Amino acid sequence: MVNTDTGTDSGWDGRGNRGGRGPHVTRNTHGARPAEAIPGRRAAAPDRGVSAPDHGVSVPDRGVSVPDRGVSVPDRGVARPGRHVAAVSLVALAALATGCEPGTATGAQAAPTPARPTQAAAPSPSPTAPATEDAKPRTAPPPSPSASTAAPAPASDPTTVRPAAPEPSTPPPPRVLMRTGSESDRVRELQARLRQIGHFGRTPTGYYGSVTADAVRSFQAKRALPVTGSTDEVTWQRLRTMTRVPTAAELRPPTERPVAAPDERCLKGRVLCISKNSRTLAWMIDGKVVSAMDVRFGSEYTPTREGVFEVFWKSRDHVSTLYDTPMPYALFFSGGQAVHYSADFAANGYGGASHGCVNVRDKKKVAALFDQVRTGDKVVVYW
View: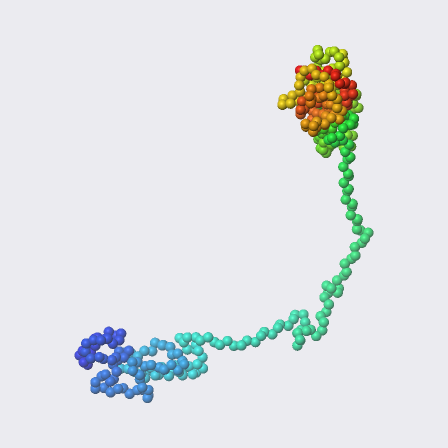
């Protein structure tokens, strides 16, 4: 920009003074040159005694924020402070008319209004009783209709109450007559009756073992009785009504199996003739069978010896010192092997084996045999 007065370029681009060529020229912010900078002119007198500040009109802040409402001084080369003063006077008069409350002037920043102390809300009166100075009702409230006028509950009529029915008592279980381990003539009869209807497939022995218990369970299950394996009064009575009284042959048959034809060595003298093939023992005198009974033998690891022997020792209540096993009515014929009664054979039948002895399961028959046999009588064991 070229200064017309000096003819020099000031170098000012409208954003402030910059160093340039020629003398320094001071300008105000509105682009008007101050009076003292123009030669031949006097400073303009301030309007109405108010001196216009340099670099534009600056209104001192008197506690009122004056918004810029678009009033600007046009850049015509002459500063006109009078209009700015008039604007300031108008804003001040408006502020005094409104009491100078913050935020009343448009564009001013709203200041927070100080909070006014609030009074505690008075308690609302009770809907049922008016409140007094001590918040107590002057008179007692009337009694509740539900408490004073309600009719009393009618008393229960003792004649309509029925006594509780007594709980049915559980009948005691029936008395047990025979169980595992029992040994008697009644056990023999039980076995014979069970055999009549197909529940016991052996010769009665009089001993209640596992075979007899299984037969009783089979009978109880088929007749819808409690399956216990023991013979109680109910089981015994039901069995008796279904069977007949056993005969002597049914109670004490000679053997379970037919007696084998005797070996020729058994035909002379007093002989215990024992057949492994038929598993029977026949007590014979001069070729005639006096009694016969079922027997079992030792296993393949402890086999019963075969041959001709003679009884060398009798022991009625013998107990094996080797196996700690009772051997009643023992008739020893070869070392530790003997003919004797076996409770295990009576209970389990041929499901087991001896340790080499000849076991008899009919206790009464072997007891009678023990009384008849003498020391020195012959013993023949064969197939």
